[in-house]
Length: 319
Image (tube, rainbow, N blue to C red; front, side, top):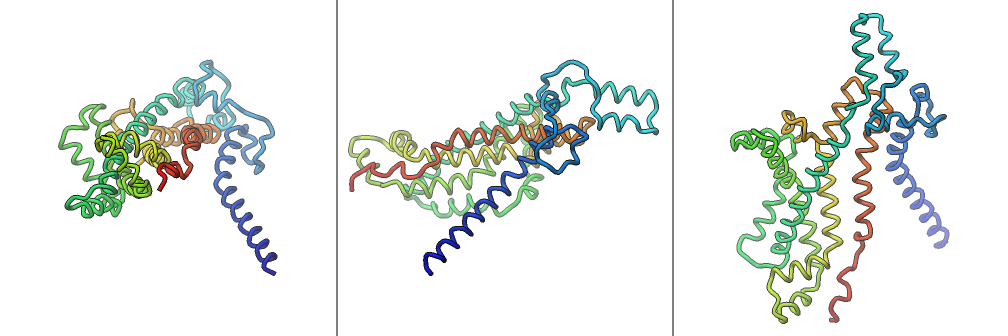
């Protein structure tokens, strides 16, 4: 009876895992399927396209600079009887231009710059801050810890107007560089509390005897952090970096407010929104751009996956 219940539980748990995995993967499969379909195949519920269409990816990546025939969706739009001949010719000329349909590389570079810089600075500050929370004794430590997490009680919609007002008063929005710095600071504010919390809890699991041994050998506090704590905490640091990177990569609210005057440094979420409301808002292009925008985060996670293992400090010191 016990074995039978165990088998039933294992089967139920396996089915539950499969359901969760399918629910997570299905949106990406749907995006991939739609991006590879021709317009006449969009109504087909099957995930397998009848014929592979790569034109959307060529247009999004600007791989085809020549003029070409209009897609079916654009032709239906141009057949609108309310359009004059001049309007129809102008719209047709715009649709035939494949250059700058979606400046993917510019948006990609801006997103990498914002996400990578903010995540790196956040991790560096969090390492030293979390170490002080977990190892050092000083007056007001508990108050500072609670105060850092207090920021998470307020949503972004409540902070966007005060932060924007402060940035204007300090003159940071007068240039693209100042706006970039202001947005980096905001992303640090959004991610630093959780980064401090996660790293602080992990640092407490590292045997203190390792640091004591290093202190006896004459190492100072900075050397202990850089040469001992950081290598032993590569698991947590990689996890925190990925978390901070994803938050900044997908952030839309603050970017839409702060970057509205600087087209050159707009990020991918803003680019996707502009694509959705532009003349090129055709489903295969939208799905192709969305899929390409999610790939850097997936590649980053897969690259750091080998670091996301536990027990790196096990066996460091024989107790």
